[in-house]
Image 1 (tube, helix red, strand yellow):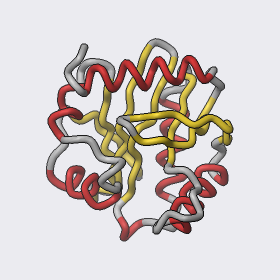
Image 2 (cartoon, rainbow, N blue to C red):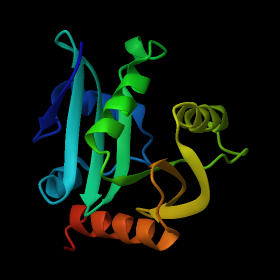
Image 3 (cartoon, one colour):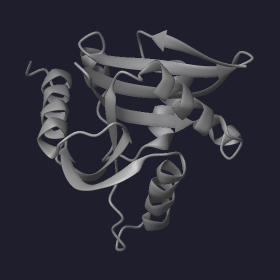
Image 4 (cartoon, rainbow, N blue to C red):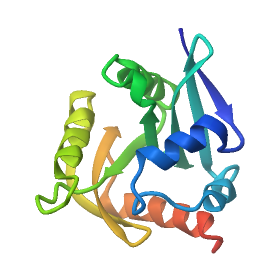
Length: 170
């Protein structure tokens, strides 16, 4: 049975997965993540029968939610756990308008195929492409809606607030 637990610190298997699942451009320093936790950021770890499956790290600002990091351990990919976690996420945060960002489908990128797969995965699981590009920590990303919709201005404000907090400017 899939179970989630709110975490207060990123370490152990969550930290290991964070380091392997995201590129250098996508990752922020661990101290920045910890700085943001308790100031709008949250970390939910998922397990099945005591075995760590994956995590979600996000940031809430009122009725808006920035879905920042989501990963499952490689051994369980393709077994439906990601879809279950996204379903749980939507139920848990049903009162939030939520969005995520992914690396753009740049055909010149070394990991182009992975970028396309990642965006297609989210589309298969009910996310919607927005056609909006967002700058996050000096890197451009494609924005997708998870549930509800937000204007580009609203998303920029949420991302900026998160960055100000995790970078120690707020």
